[in-house]
Image (cartoon, rainbow, N blue to C red; front, side, top):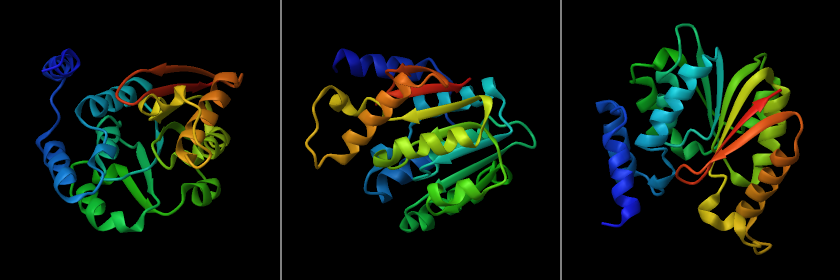
Length: 212
């Protein structure tokens, strides 16, 4: 076992357990879905729950539901009366994900939308306190600008995959639109005086952004 693998295992042994329901969802994700690596997983899931408990948001936005694992972790941390609005653009994902959300202990705290958040969110009469962005990497800049317009001062954005397997250090080919999208997002956020920001080297990079 490599040292990094051993450290990863050590970390998992020294943080809170995930629920049996989340374990079952994670297993089902790996058995039934084509890209299971897209699911958040144990460590990131516990961190998302912790962020929610720290920030205590009333309205949470998630862009990129996928299997629903991260949505359930976000909802797990919500206080009574708070709501998570989670968007998945791939309608083929609905048959897998919706039952896991609706049969969970947090179903009353989750609203699941199939559709493009960029088209739907601007028309919602909601101001968000927290947003988790894990959607199409090509549109991270557009998600970011949209969210800032729909977020309280003092609100937080958590953006996933912002180190992109280290590809952010490379000059991407013009056809590699995902890496280009992530790099444009990172450069924009770094220079943006409207926010405070930090990147955590967790999994594939997690950027924490606070709107001033």
